[in-house]
Image (cartoon, rainbow, N blue to C red; front, top):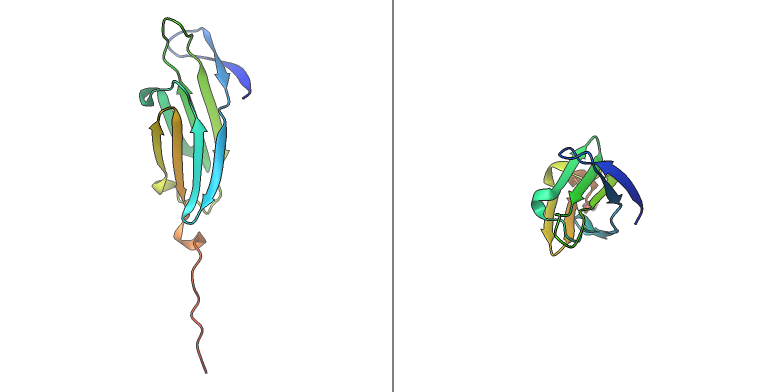
Length: 115
């Protein structure tokens, strides 16, 4: 993980910001991305797609024992990904993104005619 500092909008105290670890796997219908975001509740997570770039931003909640930290990561998507059908699920600190391929990018069978 790499670290930088960002400013929160509510406070002007910089938060340590990390690039979370991610695994990207090609599946039959597209791609699956798993991003580790420990301690980030869904209400503190933003997933945005803009001009072919999928951006993730999350922040842990402040507790009595741990200072909050922020996570940021971006992925440039291929034109083969159908952005309107991207799905995201956060469970136990693991964000799973399903990036479906557009119909034009899916393999298809070409019928062979006999003469």
